[in-house]
Image 1 (cartoon, rainbow, N blue to C red):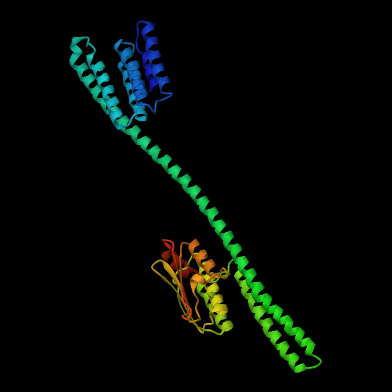
Image 2 (image 1 turned 180 degrees about the vertical axis):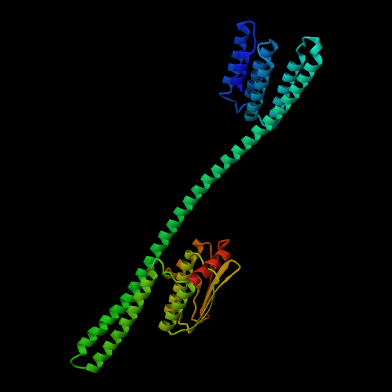
Length: 395
């Protein structure tokens, strides 16, 4: 717009080069002021805007600028005010620009007199057009600034979300590493205390059988049978440890199928009466499936090794966007506040917490134990899970 004002001044008829040069200098100075706008101190902003008005008003009063150049420069001044002032300051600048242009436009003499009515009508139309243009420019620039501010805020929020996401990812990796380390320590301790003890006892029985093989074969055979039984127990312990070490224990199975196999193996191995009630109408996320399987696996292992139970009840249901898992036994129970052995309960609690679930345990000596876990399902999983499940079953 300032370049257009310069061209207008050059192309307008003039009588002396001196007024033309001063008008171009005023427009150039006005343009250079736009390279750096004040944004902090109010006094500097007022002084800056006052000087801008001076560069418009003084050349115009001295007839160094045409009204068309004043029109364009005033429009630029109002646009700049949107970047300098807030709401009230912008309206003050717009009002002053309108008054200056209106006074300059309406105060010029009309020659010849016979065209006075037509020229007045043209001037009033121009002033009205100018006022509407200023108002439109003010609203447009503010809308653009608001949109730019919103975009910048969205970019900031997006960057913050990316940073938070990266922090959460790093935290999840640390939790995973910590859980893996604890799992390895637990398995190492169990192999040492369980499998190591069993193999040591088996070695003793075999040595006893060798000692009595010549003198008392019946007694040696008894020792061999005991060694065989210990070997079977060691094999079961190894298979269980290998199962725990798997990164994906489900191996592509549905959670119901994997749990059913786990319960059947437990009932066959432990010889404990087991009843189950499992209802999962949806395909759950992989991490939830794995966590539920691991918690049930650890719970059954603890019951087999420590509870001395004769009956176990397993309930797993999905209701209203939440998966519930409950494992109860009628074993000897224990005092949870005094249970400091191993990582089993701690591992189950950490697995549930990482996925935003809840873990609760209730037990007393002589009354068995009850473990309760719940996980919230992601929103929108209901219909998607049902469709995916039916699609998978059809295939």
